[in-house]
Each structure stands twice: as structure tokens, then as C-alpha cells.
Length: 338
Image (cartoon, rainbow, N blue to C red):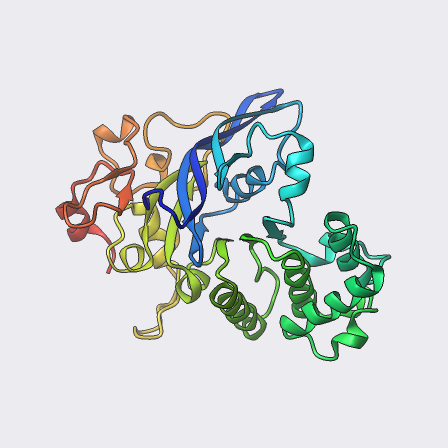
């Protein structure tokens, strides 16, 4: 975890998000902490149900509901967001922190033109902006994210654009108010490989040109390798490993991370008959196993795993590389898949 400094825009501490259900408290996020600096890309990685999207949505106040149980701290600059009122959050959403959602087809209103929705977003925060000026800005934004003929596309309905173009339009709307923090939630889902690469290059370019602090949520470590500076690996609502991109890819310390990396195809090795997979299924967030949540699926589990390990630095030469596993580093290096 990076230390809080002058460049830190977003600081999350011990974030906990639970939802009261008939079966008990579903603890979707349990003690997540991280810092995010200007110009940095933080990737949050894990299987479906690991708490990635709930973490991101909570930063924007989108998980508030009568049955939600939210604790911890989320500070954007000097502003605490978890106890901010609705007016404060309305001023922050889009203006200082924006989100690109998973499915642009359902995120856009299908009966309104793309440009009209971008204009509405601009004028909701900048009412002094005329409709004409906002429309010109919408055209400029669509062009900046690589949409051809933006003067024509601004009047298109969402269904008239391809999946890649809709995703670009969603990024354009997120950037409309020049936010400091951009959250991209599975931005390449349901896109073909070529379009995925284009979207990732676009995000990387925008991050570099605008100095955005970016949170990239994904289950795909191949996506992470293209763009991220630091990585948080989540499992069952908890961070199980975090470090720089190089640390996570070249010296992973948690068996769950090994499983995710092992599921990637490798062009530098002989093609296997079948890709390795992580056995079993993620646990119920209402009834987690005692100790390490990954223990029932872990081939390296031993007696001490019935105690919950802390998220600690276990490598003397890498104080920022944290993991939640009781195995000692030498055992890990000898036992992990290569």
C-alpha cells in the first residue's frame, strides 16, 4: 500500500460493506484498504462475487440502502464520502469521480440519443452551460475517444452503435466533467479481443494525457498486464494479495493468485491439453469457512489455515507486497506453479 502523500487523491481504509438478508448478514466487502495517486492505474482482480464491483460502487455511494451496513473510511482529497449527504455525493459523482459501467447497452437509456445523454450529464453539474455548448462538448468528447464521425454519431441511439463504440461513448460520458478519479468496471466485458485491446489502449492513453487516477476492475489478469501499475487481488470480499504489477506477476505469494495466473494461456510454453483451473467454488459470503476463506479450495492448506491470516508484508525486500497466507516465502517459491 502506498503511503498517503501530496499526490494521493483517494484513500480507502478498512472498508466494510454488508447486506442484511433473510439468511443473515452477507459480508460483500471485508476490510479493504488502498491509496490511489494521480496518474496511477490500480487493478482490482478476482472472480465474480469477490467484492470488486461492490467496493467500487460504494466509493460513489451507490450501495446505500436500508439493508446495507457500511463502515470504514473513503476520503477523496479532504472529503469523507461514506457519511457525505446526498447533495455532496451528487456534486462528486461525474465531476470529481466517474464510473464506466460493465454493460454500456444497459447503462445508456435506449430511447434517448447518445449526445442528449452526455449533454444532460454536463448540464446537471454545469447548469450555466447552454445546450449548444454542451452539444459541442459532447461531439468533441466522442471524437477524443476514437468514435469516427462524431458530429453524426452524437445523434445516434445506443442500439445503433457497436459494442465497442458504446463502450467508447460510455467512457466519453464519464470524462465529460474532467474527473480526477475514473473507475472502469469490467470495461472489456463481451467485447472481442481486438476491440478489448483498443479500449485498453484508450484507457491507458487517457490516463497518461489527463493524469487520471484510475481503478480498473476485472477478472482477467491479461487485461491487468496491459495497463496496471498496482494490483489488488480479492477473494470472498477480502484482499488476499496486493503489490506492484511486477510483484504480482513475477513473485506471487498467495495460492489464489497462483490459480488466476495459471488459468492464463501462455504463448511461450507448449500448448496444454487443458488449461489449469481452480477447483471447487467460491464460498457463501453469509457463511464463510473459518480462517482463510480460500482454505477449502487450496491444495496447500495445512492446520494453521484455520486461523485467519492478516494481510501482511512477508518478504523482507518488498515491504509493499502484502499477502494473506500462512505459508512461509521459501515454501511458496518451492511449491507454486511455474
